[in-house]
Image 1: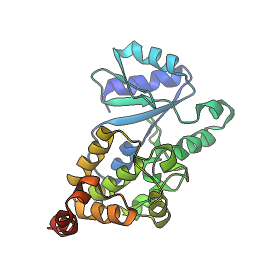
Image 2: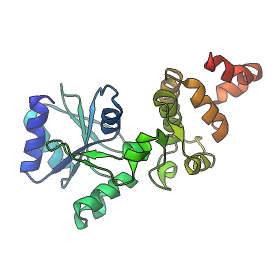
Image 3: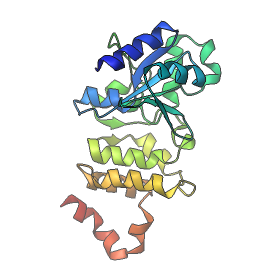
Image 4: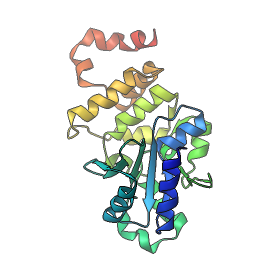
Length: 231
């Protein structure tokens, strides 16, 4: 951890915030996969306060439409606020973490690590899912909240060797991607094709009914795709 990153965590805590490292950062650390950047969720602050406090450490960059993400320029750490913020103040810390976890995509991405103590909190059983390499939706609203999570799950299976949990696969079959922006779909498909096992992702696409439209347009290519990817 860089000194600047540690200083930011210490400062946020000193002014009443509660930062936790989460998402793919914790997942990859547990799996022994190289971590490229760090995702941090901050409880106990509003957007204006978080942005202001981060501004003490440099220029603050902002990203995202559905969820705002803040980054101090030059530091590969992305800060965001928790899901369902409306009721966060009425909850205990374990309840806050669970509430945020239920708003995430998969249990494997719903683990929380205290940035200073290193303690990991696991509200939804994500550590066991990682142990057996199983991808399981965080809640029954996972795909309702963001249909693109269907393709995210597929590319994670292709990249990281996960299997798809049966209930999650059933839920994927009921999802339509009709309203999802093309560029978002492209990003996930690109990660799938560049994964270690794209054939595994293809089998989940077929099982879930989410084969890309471009593959359906060329019948011969479609039927040979699984064999090509396996090779």
